[in-house]
Length: 281
Image 1 (spheres, helix red, strand yellow):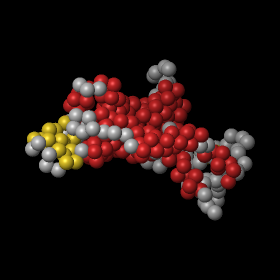
Image 2: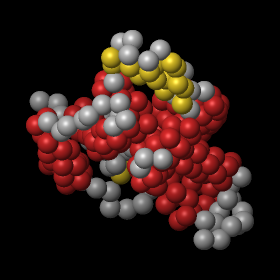
Image 3: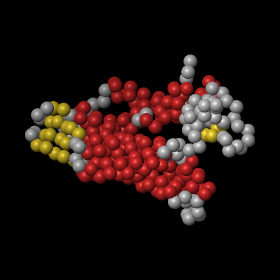
Image 4: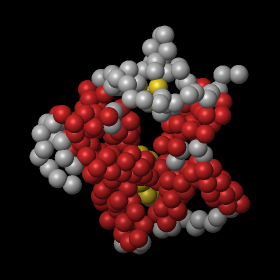
């Protein structure tokens, strides 16, 4: 039985499992609709909380490297060689097989990821363009007693702050602070690679790890909107729907996640080795 596709999928699974963010979205949406309806927790909510806890514990203790060693053991390289390659799929360091593939997961091995910078720049610039309408256009529309009320991301946070400042702070961090911080950090990392900055490597690696972890939390606002739509639907009396900014915001979040995934971190090491010293840690 070929388990390689399953193990490769597990490598990327942690980034895209967002049950914990969805749970926070349930709490935010419940607080948001308190002015329009009475929300009471059911048995399904407690079951979902248990699912989130079990999933988080499972993923935190899941060691994919041990699974690779168990099912597809390979002898590690014992000496440094220019022909050694690092596989980005299973993180095995060794020599390519006769077809130029990783001997463990059978992914083609290359010295550096093909078109990494081009794809990363394209995704980053596109996300910057999309973030403008995402923050200027209405992201949610409420129809109440025949009236229409539109909210942008910022106005929605301000209205939420009037009832619960802590929840509004969470939404502000996830919907505004995280996306723009991620764009600024990625822009800085790409410029450091372009100008071959030698110093500050440790800081840049830490920044890359940070944006890899925080990027998924930008999906919180979209989860809140989708949950609010399911909670509020009373036809002509009360209705809630997404605004045009929701599409732009969702696309921008996905593009920033892809930009981080497409960036070959080894390019930072290349710049560190070949560039001129400009900055210090």
